[in-house]
Image (cartoon, rainbow over all chains, first blue to last red; front, side, top):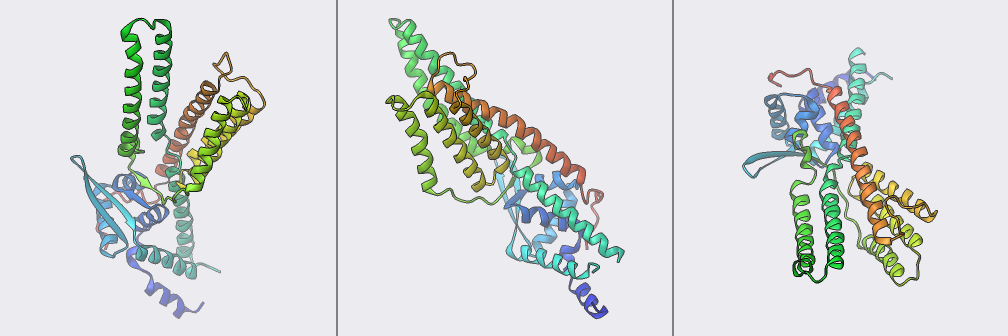
Length: 102
Length: 233
């Protein structure tokens, strides 16, 4: 692969997906139909603020859908990946494969 | 080059995380406790009230106790449906909730299950099928249906263990292995002991496995070092 091609892949890499925590969130959400805030918190071991920041970024990019509801008096937030998010996640790994040593 | 190898390692780590999350979601068993507990309580109450009514039928409150039990059984089934709908697997509330994509179970599968399960009981009642073979047929029917249901509802580990235990019990019943805790061979008592017994064993086994998987996920913490609420831009 030529340097130009490598540079092109580098430039095309989606920065929203590229961040490690967001990658992990997308991986979990692509494995499931839906996961709630507590599940992501438990599995990723992040702080609430950190997780909220990353999920907001993914939501702003249109990669995940957020559903907020009240269960009794407790707020409950769940997430699911959108088609766009799934596509971008796949594309990211394909780009990465292009960069892997032959 | 080093960066590329790191990316590959990260991908493998993420693939493992996805697999573990999938296994965790498919091995939640505590939800089974509600229907099984209510089933056990109802069987004890029905049996107890029948025994009481046969022991002292002339006492009015004993005669009426049976009807109270009937009302309780109907109410408890309604309660079980409500509780399962409300709590589902949220015994795991502190660990959060995850749902996998489910597929609908076709009508023909329900019909085939109902036909073989009820058919075995009816044939046994009509004395056309011995307790041994009726039991084996009913358990095989339950086992196969649970396996199929678990595949469709993405509860493969839970349904796999319970279904295979039911099939093993069906083989044991067909081979004439004596049913534990039953002195006289009785179709209904043996069936309940086998189904509830295998259900309880499943809950314990799968719950232990589920906790192990969760511990592995927590240990993995691929990005657990990023605890600070730093900006991500």
